[in-house]
Length: 333
Image (cartoon, rainbow, N blue to C red; front, top):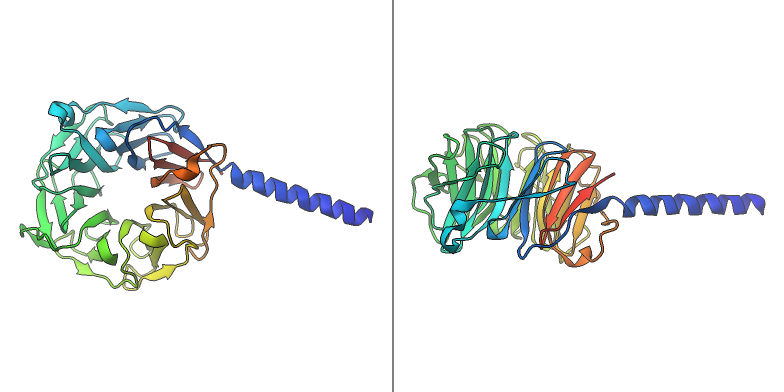
């Protein structure tokens, strides 16, 4: 009887310990006190990160999310030309870009060379929203958006060249699928994802793009590769697809969810990563996506009602997720 009682106490203690540990992984880094949404976040290390969103919002932290500062962008706020910013990407502590949509209908790109103290408007040359932007270094970058828009620059954004389905200077067709995210792993090799399960790959820096077969027609919101072979894309209806051969084959992974729309994905290795989306969904895998577990949001009350739009994990020990109303969550394993 004593052994049985002792065993029961040990089991209860273990369950309690595991439950508390799981429950306390995500805590509030910033209150949700904005009128609009935070759409994208990028950390270059565990301390320095930027987040962007509606109404030209740009936030910055230099202390791991303990304090977030609002950064001003006068140029895109003149004459009430407020821009919604959908993506942000930094290559180091100084050089970064963000893209989005001006309310009067043109793709907007802003850039900084001093870590965000000053932001300058760049000319995108397109009259459609831009949803994704990625730079491999301070000079070479790409941006994607509606109607099959792909832009490329080799000058840090002082000049952007439009592509359409991989044809330089081609007219962007209204019937082309929209692209929502882009990532490169080398100067030559990259991927775009978008509407109707679209995945395209380039092996020549964006001069030509080849469609890759994917067993889903769900809209895909985000893509993440950890090297030239291993990557994931996520999107509508709880969709997660993965590849281990550079996209020659894409396999649907079981997220365990079917109604949630996934908006963001980040991996710190071939095994460990996160996916975020509707209803405060945060999924975590430590086996490359063979199994996905729902993370809880710790002491943050009411989070279950918000949509989480993006996540950035600079290393296995920290991650930041951004959501509606300016709410930011921090992962503490």
